[in-house]
Amino acid sequence: MIIRNLGLQDYTDTWQNMQRYTQQRTNDCPDQIWVLEHSPVYTLGLNGKREHLLNIGNIPIVQSDRGGQVTYHGLGQLVVYILFDIKRLQLNIRELVTLLESSMIKTLAEYDILARSRTDAPGVYVEGKKIGSIGLRIKNNCSYHGLSLNNNMNLQPFDRINTCGYSDLKVTQLSDLGVNISTDELANSLVRTITTTLSK
Image (tube, rainbow, N blue to C red; front, side):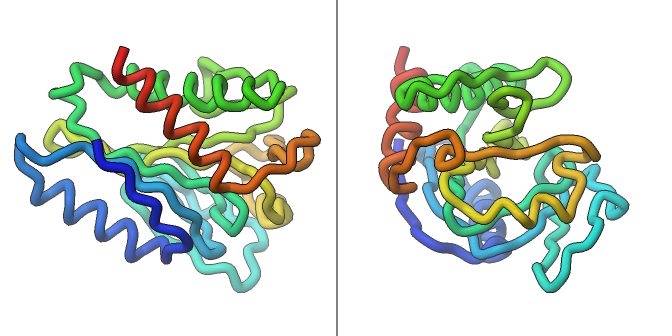
């Protein structure tokens, strides 16, 4: 497993790099986890409907190939991309989603935040507000894209969209829940949880 800490990255460049790695990888290529943040951007998933973009202002929009609807990425949000050979790991897509959800839940529990997943809407929630999102793409039995976890960011851009396609869905973040840590610290905790869970 290779862990790459990439810092602040452009969304489109990173997406194209993930596609390239996935297309070119062989059975011998190692799985990778990419840890980063994105400059402000709205992204639409494969099934994303532009009607969920309400008043986006000058924030760019990218039509992506991940699953899911519309979301927002920005500074202070942890993004973790999962470039896994899921066949080699003996995971199906539902098991991978569950692994990512449970890893976020366990990480938040380290900071005394009680979070839950929902059967009707992928992601992680605290008191009904979304704190962590998941959007994946599987190609040739390999995954890319991944998850985002809100740490300490400007949440206002979420008010300009129907987040994940829900008009009444609110979002939250660690800093609003009384936890003030660096995104690097949060990343270390989450990646450790993911890799530990995989090794069991």
